[in-house]
Length: 453
Image (tube, rainbow, N blue to C red; front, side, top):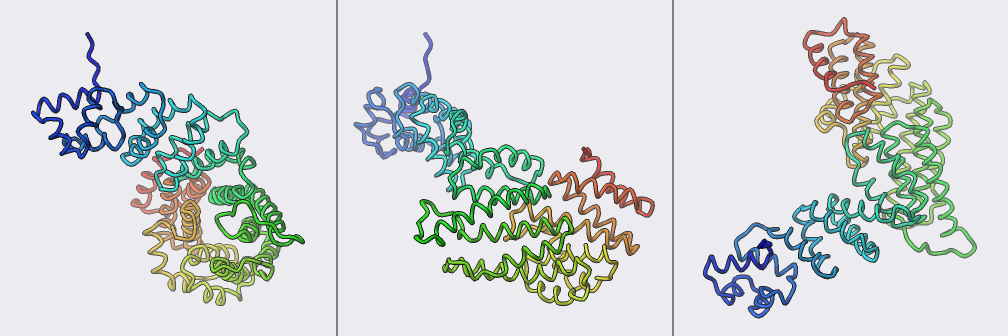
């Protein structure tokens, strides 16, 4: 005869081993003795809170018997009032395999899909991303043939959760998610397009950034007109995460950046004008005023920048003075100043000296900031190091130039930034003949970690 282990058999064994009566164990566990008796007899199913109290009274680690509890839940008709708290406790204790097991069993009954999705949303908002991802994946799988907003939201959340330092994985995530954007609610589309644009920007896929930024700006403009500018304004059924006008002007900011990367500074300045003049903005909240001030500041800085990159070196002192107190703008500004110096061959040693402490602090944190998503921050830091390296190599300060080049290579390898890796390798090979033995050894160690595609 095969004896199956159950929570009841474990409890019964514990009582016999310790010599405790039901009344004594009831006092320890804070569970009514009558309830305990019916549980042991199998008359009453065990609630989640009761299981945790029993486990604690038995002196066992949190989460003990959870596998048995899942099996017991499946032995009865599915009961959401029992399963929901079980999923939350599994999320708290990071029991992801159990969540996957339970959710896959539940999604066989499509009636539970909306409840599971709502649970995933709650866990996502609580920051329990791994647990939420398990549920989103099962919900998406169960609805993969549906053209539903819920399916699109699952993929949006999974895209957000999957983003990290590995740029190759970020590209795969962005490509996979992009086909679901149009299925989202019109308001959610704005945030999704903004997030996609940021990822493609960090990947330096400028054609994609331009395409997505244009789409985001167009959709936001239509919604803005619908809400504020028609004869009779309408309330949106759902508000975006940020003030609606932000998505319009962020589109201009992104497109000015694309023009910058293409060397079209005249067109970049036209976009700057579009996000510098904001008298049309209807929103009057504290956040709206803060955003407007931020964009006006960027407009001033980027006007100097694009004039500098066009060859108007005389604006450099004003540009430096302006960005000096703008903490999050110093690194991207220095990168562009170095780019201009490398292109037009002027000396910026005094500027580098001025910001030496800032450069050292960026080195310690790899360029991350509170303003930009970390993928964008690390990408900008990589290009700062490459431009700084080029500046020193052009001025025949080989030791400094090659040191910064290898720093840039190390970050590029860390985030799987293939174009930056290739650029660093090509530059090093050009100057290998002046590299010290120490520099060459470091290069060989770094390059052994990666295969150039």
